[in-house]
Length: 252
Image (tube, rainbow, N blue to C red; front, side, top):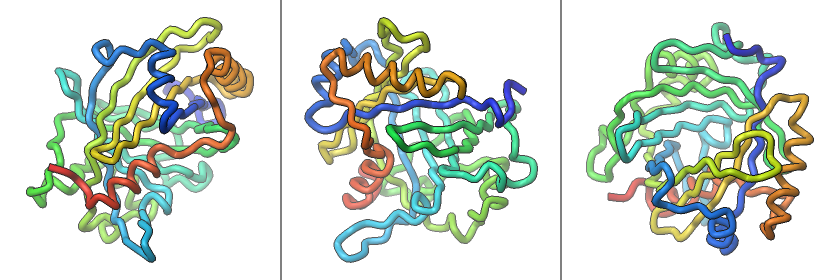
């Protein structure tokens, strides 16, 4: 086992959105031809209420995400409990572990001033792409391990019936070299369907003892390059899922 929850990784995230996204990509010299391309889908049970959209699973702390590779890489399907209470994780799922094609991690997500714990079970494989005209493909191909984790966490089969696939999101990922930063940086650009939404997220993983200093250094490094980094960060997952739910789910 690589680590225990007590010294679990911290993932620090900074998101640039809207009109600033294109300028940020240019400033950081992120070339689409040099990035790793994937498509992303999420699942939820959207409800249209009073002119808005509710996402019950996301609101209750569950994210179901599929990332499909565009080349020879494996796809991955992830279920994530975020935020999660580390002390109330079900038996058998209280420490990080991995077997074969799946990996279970527990880490703390830092986004601006928001800090939450997340537990994720990622399974690698070859997954079908959700399509608008195939009802079966609109349900996630959860593994036995993922169903066990969700069932023990209060997300049994009744909560997972008739889910709606939300997507696609076009994703490009890079590993840019940013001087002055000790830890490797991951940059990921999301383009959300036909909605015109774009998000660029930069993230760093580090240990808890270094997290505060690393977050401050990342923010300062980006601001020195002329990028606006707000302490109030937008959740790109919620914004993207909400826009896709308004548009009716998965496009053809």
